[in-house]
Image (cartoon, rainbow, N blue to C red; front, side, top):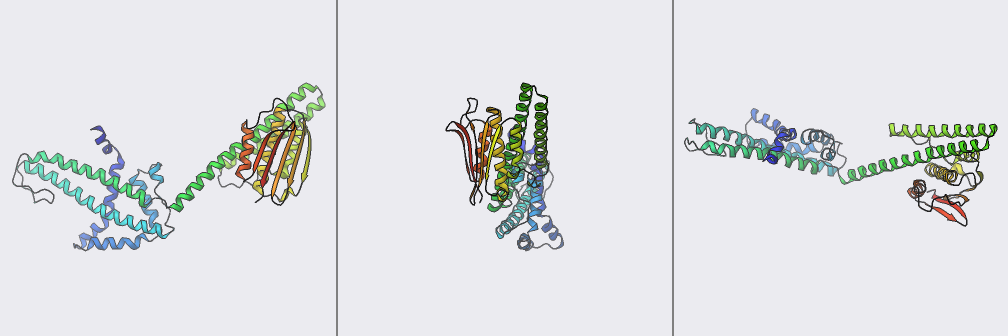
Amino acid sequence: MVRLLRPFGRAVTYTRWLHLFIAVVWPAMWLFVEEAWWIWPAAAATLAPAGLVPAMRTVEGLQARLLLTGHRHNSESMDIVVAPSVSWSDRGRLVVWLEARLLLGYATAMLSMQLLISTVDLVASAFGHDVDEGVLILLDGHRWWHVLLAPLSLAALAATVVGSGRLITALALRLLGPSPTERLAAMEERTEQLLERTRIARELHDSIGHALTVAVVQAGAARAAGDPAFTDRALDAIEETGRAALEDLERVLGILRESGRPVSGRPTLTDAHRLLESARASGAKVDAELTGPVDTVPGPVSREGYRILQESLTNVLRHAGAVPVRIRIEVTDEALALEVRNPLTSDIPGPGRGSGLRGIRERAALLGGRAHTGPDRGDWQVHAELPLR
């Protein structure tokens, strides 16, 4: 019993009923001017050209969201489109929606009023009052048991209110929902958002992780050296790396605050000297070989290449310390090849371990390239190939 009564405690049950009544308000007003049978067919014919107006879907969508879903940001609300029609398929579905809403609204309004009138007539007849001839129930005389039929009439009215509301909502989700093209666009937008979140997570991991690694290595080396001049150089390196990390953090937070902000401020391989100098200041012996025009590498490839190089150097400093590092960057007409090698130590994680190594492979895969990390001829190697097209 509680389950049956639960819909009547929700406001959306009555707003759906109101939504159906609104559909027949203007034909009903027409009936006050001239009472004729042809008004309803004329009203249905009038709705057909109205449904071809693109802005009409916005009007119907907003009204359906407000009255049929309670204007909540739930799955039902989001499945009703409020954008104008962009195709003939959208316009056709809107015409069907307008006609169905008019037909269901007329049936619901007439049935609701007749059931309500019948309930009143049953009670009045039971108490000896004369009533007019009803449409749904024909009363013969005054019988006390007529009052026993009143609850049945009310139950039918309640079923009409709930059932018609659920039916019109189902039709709205079907006819005012997104088209296949709009669903695909929404899916692509959602995918872009997820990729953006993943990219931001990698950005923070690479940038902040690199800065903290350099700071830890520099501080430890300065303490062990006991040389004031070396300590000054270490502090300068920590300051410069920390400043760059703060710039990256501010940029990432800016992207989160402003989704439309361009990514042009992100570092590229033309800024690789910052990473090399930071690694050298941390004690690593860096030997870099550059082949080809780095400045002609497309922005997305150059930015991801910079992050791969940054994560590779961070792993060297974190796990191997101040060791010789050989870097090779080669730009051809088809691809960017990046290789980082350093002597293998027991502290370096095995292949596939660590979020940084996974991030390197993910960055390469997102660009259609490939990356390999792991031991190679006594060295630890990071090798990535990123297509330029």
